[in-house]
Each structure stands twice: as structure tokens, then as C-alpha cells.
Length: 156
Image 1 (cartoon, rainbow, N blue to C red):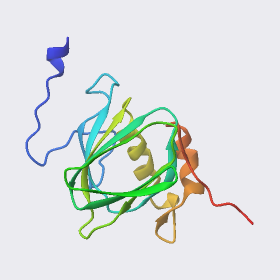
Image 2: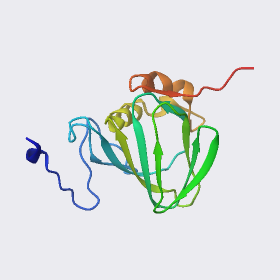
Image 3: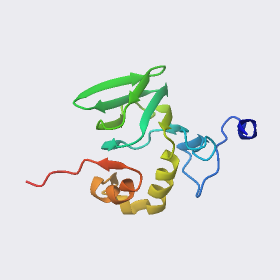
Image 4: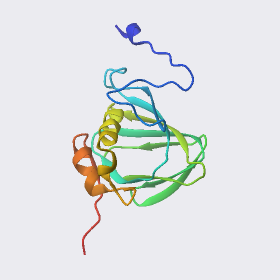
């Protein structure tokens, strides 16, 4: 029954997962908590997210603090505290830090599963990085399991 899924977290608390995520990713409601309908995280964007496409999930972002640069399709916008962004599935986008300290946001993915992808990424650790940056070529084998595809650089 739905009343058995009631959840109340203390300030600063997050839901446990398969493995602990860095403090920049606080899972407030995981996929298991919502019967797969969505996942909700509080995120401090410590690293830029390369251009990618979610093939199934819609991504919603509400900026709490700072400025988030959003590349959506072929345009770039800046979202500041109090602004909301809907990134529908099937449309390429990228997220970048446009403030110091980095932007802090609420991220909702529907259907859920975003925290599961993050767990897989952090389990892979530095294997998805090249020169300290997220590498789309290295990300794609993990992302594919979650219906996500990163744009890979074209070879000239």
C-alpha cells in the first residue's frame, strides 16, 4: 500500500543505495522508493556533464543556488536560483557549472533510475575519466545500460 512508502528525511540526510555516492549527490527519493516512477536527488554540480541524450527518461532540474549553464539541442541558456528546466527524453543536452561555488540543484528523473546510473559510474571510478574529465567514449558502455548516449568526438 502507498502509505507504507511514506518517507521523511532529516535535513542533510540521503537514502542508502547499492554503494555510497559522494556528498555532491544526495538521493532524497530513489527508484525503489517511488515504485520506479521517478528518482529525486539534490546535486552540487562539481563536474561539467558532457552532451548526452536520455532515450527514455525526462530530466527535471530546479536550481537552488548558483548558475547552471544548460546546452539544449542547439542553444545555451543560464538557469539561476529559482529557475526550472525540463529536459525531455530524446533531445541532446549538456550541463555546466557557470558559478563559483558550483550550482546546487534538485534533479528529478522520470522514470526513475538516475541514482542507479550514478552508482554504476562511481563504481567505475577513474575508468570513465581522461585527463580528469568525463570521457564520452568511456562513459557510453555504462550509460547504454541506462538508455543514455553521450556524444563522442568525431575523428577527422
